[in-house]
Image (cartoon, rainbow, N blue to C red; front, side, top):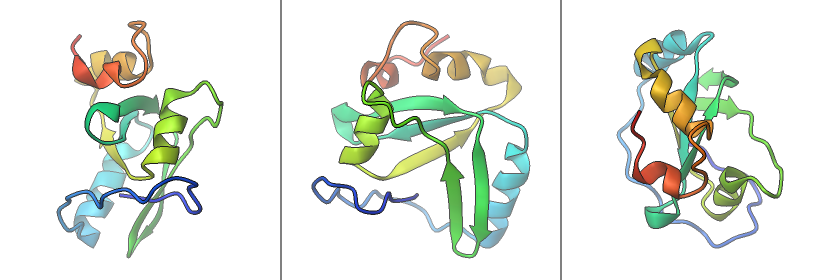
Length: 120
């Protein structure tokens, strides 16, 4: 999980999460090298997601990631990050190309609707 400093919105509810160990973080980062990930952001019906190819490990202790995000005002994901500055990064496998395409908006669905039916 991560937080965007100085988010100019209400304080979000702390999401439930499992403890990330140094070893599990390193293992996940090794799997990410050169890969694609789906980033899910928001809460409840305001959740949305997007596909990224730029996820970098900043440190293993504490576990920290750097994810590049477009700050375009018409970006549903950027708006969701400003409201709820916590997100999950899901490393995708080759067999999950349909999910990468889905969260990239290739099916024409954008915003909170993209979480509702991520099928392919």
